[in-house]
Length: 111
Ligand code: HEC
Image 1 (cartoon, helix red, strand yellow):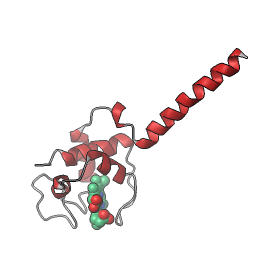
Image 2: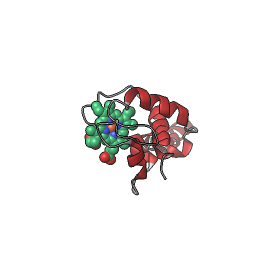
Image 3: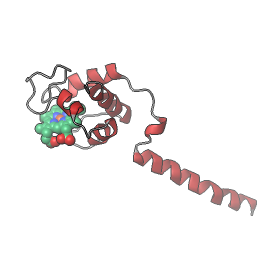
Image 4: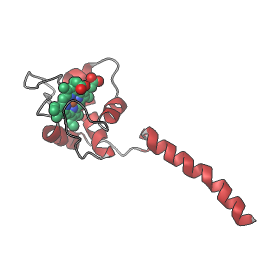
């Protein structure tokens, strides 16, 4: 009897933590590592995007600096965007932390 009650009480807590994970759980996020974001960008993004703050016209599409400058963009949006494939980009093996680091790297270019 007591055991059953305990089980029933723990369940919602488990469901909540799953929900938070699915939502992105930025509250508990580790500190973003901008250097790691820059390294990953050079490796996975520079083929198509100009990834340096100066922008330049090396890229085939919108530069990271231009993305950062959009008035409506947030690092959460970039991080979630990176969990889906885009353009002809093969889905790179990026962890959640990696996508957040890249997002932080892009967002620090905001003027
Ligand atoms: C194969 C080329 C290619 C690669 C590699 C690539 N992108 Fe893109 N990216 C594009 C193109 C083209 C667009 C614009 C069209 C679109 O959204 O699909 C774009 C758009 C974006 C956008 C803006 C989405 C919006 O709201 O319009 C972001 C942010 C972005 N890329 C981030 C990245 C990051 C970060 C990487 C590296 C992990 C990356 N991209 C790698 C081609 C690429």
